[in-house]
Image 1 (cartoon, rainbow, N blue to C red):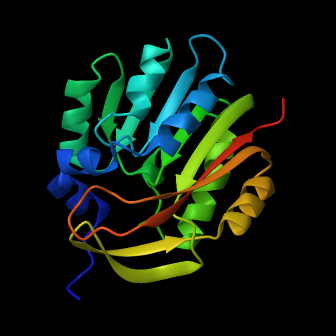
Image 2: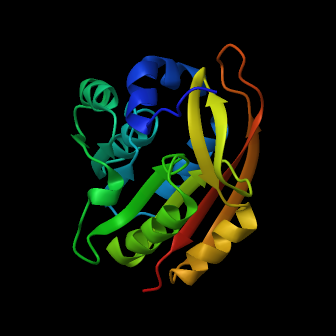
Length: 209
C-alpha cells in the first residue's frame, strides 16, 4: 500500500464524487430530520467536516437555522459555498478551531473524524461537549470499528483510519458529560466502483441544561 493520503488530499480529489456516492444514505437524512426536532428556532449550528454542504448544511439552512461549516479540503469548501450560499463555510482543520464554551446550539460531525487517531478523536469529543450550550445537541456519525491506525482503501484512496465500536463511542460521549438521546445503526453501500457495504452509527447526545 502506498503512503496514506491526508483527509485534505482525499476529499480534494473526490470532490462531487463523494456527494454522489453517499447521496442515497437515507439514514443520514433521517438523523438530520430527527435533529431538527431537537433544535430551537434559528439555532446556531456548527458542521464539522461539512463536505459539499449537502445534505447536512442544506437541510439545516432550509429549516431556518444559522449554519457555519468547516472542512479541511479546499475543494469541499468551494463546492459547499456554491451549493449552499445561505450557510458560511471556512477552510480549517477541526483540531485547530477554538470557540468559547457554550457557543453552539448544535454540532454535527458526519464521518469527519475517521482519519484522526483515537486519542485525537476522544480529545475532540470533549471539546465539542464544551462548545455546546446547556441543552445543546451533538449529532455524531462514524463507521464503528475497534481499530486505531489501520490502513485501508476508501473510494480508491489509501487512508489510515481509526474508530471506536458504537458502545465505546457512547461511553466516551457520556464521559464528556453528554446524555445519549438516540442511537441508530445502518448498513450502507456507497455508489462507487469497488465500494463494499459499511456499517454506520448515528449518535445524538445532549448536554444537560
